[in-house]
Image (cartoon, rainbow, N blue to C red):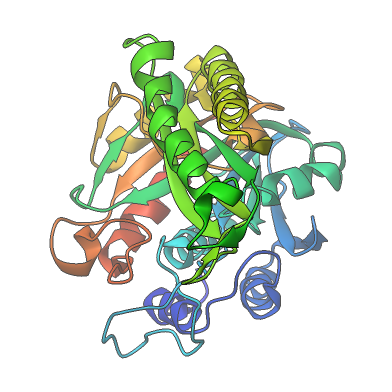
Length: 375
């Protein structure tokens, strides 16, 4: 493997986070090292995505290994020497580590004479917003590159280094988003009887939305409905004319998503009608549920066992992952990998005090290499 200090590389990515599709520095740094390592590199897939290819063996099709590159639009709260130098941007989900591990695996496999199949290394933009995978697919990813299976991983704070987790079938939840605009009749705060107060109406909607999980969805189905924002256009002595309610929903099955949307519209319209207000409900899906393929998961489990230990029946996790979009086009599997059990390495993902654990880099590289050579 070319003489590249992967810890220093990861920390450089951490210090210079980029978000969404605006990954010029990040993508260029990764692509340059892949090119120096002798890989065939295609830039600009889906805007700023990268595909690096090692062509080995007689089979034209190859396996794809994927990492994400984007950071989060939040302020870092660590005192690390390599903390973010960009206010409001932070690698709080470990994508700096994911990219570094996949880069390290690509460089190592490029020097491995025992590799006997073609491998495509995918570096994806905009995972956090759930649009990067779709952009790469729309840009012809599966038409331009012969991919038979695809694999992904994500670090997991609180899980020991060298440990992995996954399961067959549904693994990561869908994410639906909603925005509800309640329109009333604003006026003077001293004369509420002359208006229609959308705040009272909106508050009733927020309360009743909680009944979707408890009264409209079976207890055996995973269902989360969270109101995450409530804004008005009122002021201290002004009754608002409009209220804006937004939030997030999670589950694993389409019928749960359909039930949430149906009940949300009925609740919002019904309460508004009772209060003399009106509303608009916008409901959309950001992330599809991630479903692991049986055979691909078995291969991932075997590879992880070569490195450490794996819980192959970990259970479903409530967060969402853009990797799910790839699995709607090719069979594959997604695993979680331990990030450590203490300090910033055990802080929750998306927490301002989180940091990817550099001690996990070797485990990630070893896992990717074992999986690439497993056939």
